[in-house]
Image (cartoon, rainbow, N blue to C red; front, side, top):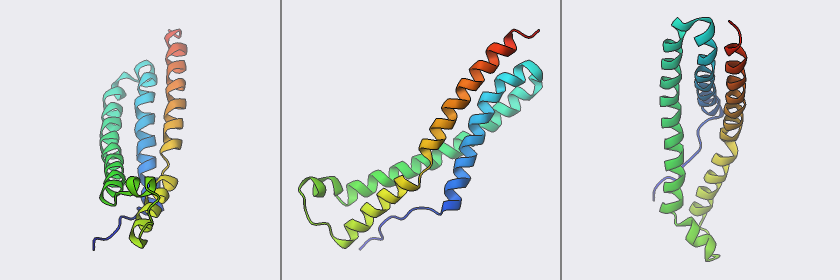
Length: 130
């Protein structure tokens, strides 16, 4: 019998959330550095790319883990058939729901959206300053 998947610790979730957020800020602040300190553009860009590299590899692994759990335990078929879930199946469903609930991806997407709007506004405003 294989061991059902489990979620990562809350501190791990926050660490990767912060990494993704800092990478998002790095990309959006480049527009400001172009106007006030062009020599910082390249280092900030690399910080953003490397941060995203690690962040999205982590998100990819979480996504694959969720999909493999659904497939390995045939959860969609069992739910559609209204089949009784074994204790192991229930543990996997609990993992999936807990993983989605614990995830901060919605907050991350919202903040990235807002930072993108602010970056566009900053570029427009700074374009008019000589």
